[in-house]
Image 1 (tube, rainbow, N blue to C red):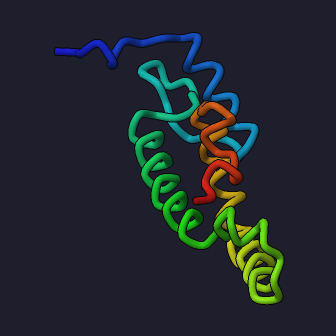
Image 2: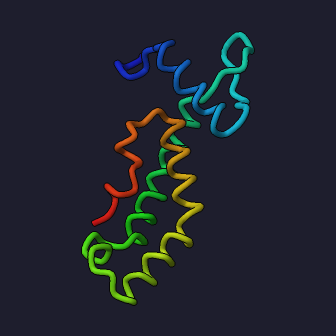
Length: 114
């Protein structure tokens, strides 16, 4: 028995699946007729859980707002170091959220600073 969230919405599927293909390349999911589609529900769940883990990692590694406003030698080194070490994780997180069709506010790095 399908719940409310399980309804097929072709508009959403087209929009988000095109984003996924544009960002990550060709998808290999197949529908009932054998046609290639974008993301399956399982792929979306995996992508979201990975993005969730990356968000926590990025949140802990970024400088705090107070440290950004006070440019001491230590704070500047910490900011530069965190930007370089987290660069790959930040890009992966942003791409995952874009592929899922999230609001741009959700993956804005300045909003993740504490």
